[in-house]
Length: 173
Image (cartoon, rainbow, N blue to C red; front, side, top):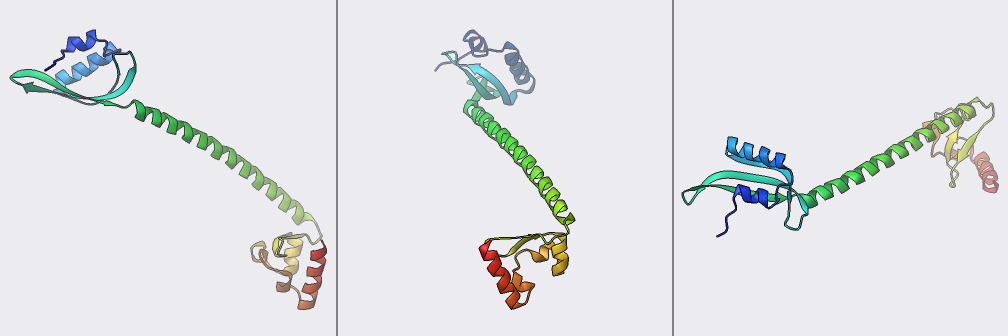
């Protein structure tokens, strides 16, 4: 049965920070126990481990003793740091994309404003010849809003023969 005294832990270099050991020891002496005490402890080969310490004073075989549990948090902290780097990178990507979208929106608004000033009929259709955009003059001709226009075809606004002729012209464009 091996026992270790408080002075042994100092002599072994287990506590690289004497101030943290003193704080841990003071809390243990005052409260009789310590929960979730974050610190760094040194291994025999000199590596430092980020740990949480739990300790409780107790009687064992008629003598005062301290039961200590050490939870190695090194890997967890590494993973948390990695997640923080990913989160930060994602925030940067979102900020960049948000700025790009704001610029695209501003460009779209400038385009719409310019097109609405033109006295000509200006419109755009998709590959299926459905309206996706029309300027103010065109919307007034059709008697609808931009939202009502989107997705509709010439047959929704013109007689059948006129719609066929417009579609034939569109097919050549």
